Image (cartoon, rainbow, N blue to C red; front, side, top):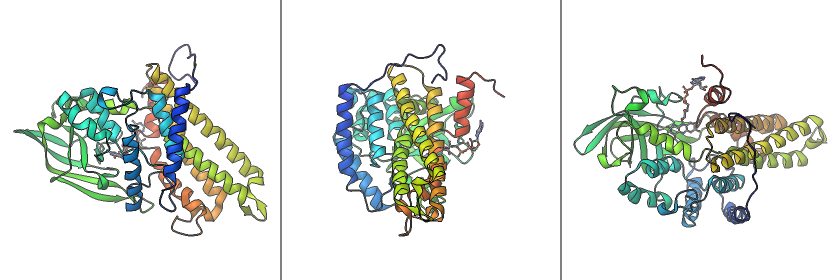
Length: 403
Ligand SMILES: Cc1cc2nc3c(=O)[nH]c(=O)nc-3n(C[C@H](O)[C@H](O)[C@H](O)COP(=O)(O)OP(=O)(O)OC[C@H]3O[C@@H](n4cnc5c(N)ncnc54)[C@H](O)[C@@H]3O)c2cc1C
């Protein structure tokens, strides 16, 4: 794999005995926690949707926080373990594979922003609470007319004595109905060019913030619209300098770039599909004996193995201090599109049963693939759409001309 580095990369990566021991420890923990999952738990983005799922998520997160695993790569001075990106990836892989919802939503974006750009007071006040999973965050970035082109956002923040007063609208605010705090990127100087006039705010959710459910196409409540009307945020809750919020947000994005959740979660889903094909007959023949089904399963198995290795390659590059923007875009693109392909293939193999929703006893594998079929299109959008990822690879990696 050589998307950007001239002359190739000599890859010398194997897990250390300490990393193997960590994997064992994480695996034992996740296997145990998986036993307390609510009935019919199918993992993925299910935690925010139901009270039961949320209670399960909260109970796991608290245990993970107590072990100090929430902040594996944080510096020790902030309560972290000082581990590298590979250890973080091992944890994320094991957790996704066992479908254990152990990582709080959005917390890394805000924690990294505070760690890199926050004042000493902010670090002392916020980081321990984040590390102990005492806070649930909503992410107030995207707007109705600012998603991929986030720098065009129009939510404003105006100084008023000891506060900033924020007004505007955010959208796709995932899990906000479970959150108690919010971080918001807002425009503080309309005269500065685009991303230079933005500021990053953190605050407890209170008067001036209204969330309205934005029901997903499968009927679940995961996203919200966020209406911000004279929301007052104390000046001391500005992270980084005023008008420098773009860089604070990017610090979070850069902290953990190697994403393995799609690859590891998808691998587990594929294993379930393989078992289903071994056990299920169609027209008197076991599905797994049909040549076409077998070929499709094999193709997916190879691709998921490649996606897992790709993620570790990125973590390894990151641990060597390399710029991984292009590889991270490529890996995100590959694994998210692969999940979409897995879901569609599973539905094709299962035929009409594949489209039965999880409430029905007739739904194979608790309706996992019907659900994934709808959610996986979101995976190709969140954190950068497929097209944006391709642009990054084209321009920065392949040095193709911009149009
Ligand atoms: C599961 C999920 C969770 C999310 N959670 C949150 C959250 O908690 N908080 C939050 O703030 N946001 C959240 N988002 C929103 C997400 O960040 C945006 O959806 C994403 O940035 C894309 O923006 P958009 O939806 O406005 O689409 P647009 O940017 O309008 O894109 C529309 C289409 O145009 C294409 N396109 C856009 N620009 C270009 C270009 N330059 N070149 C080629 N094609 C282009 C895109 O690829 C896409 O196909 C979430 C999204 C998802 C799917």
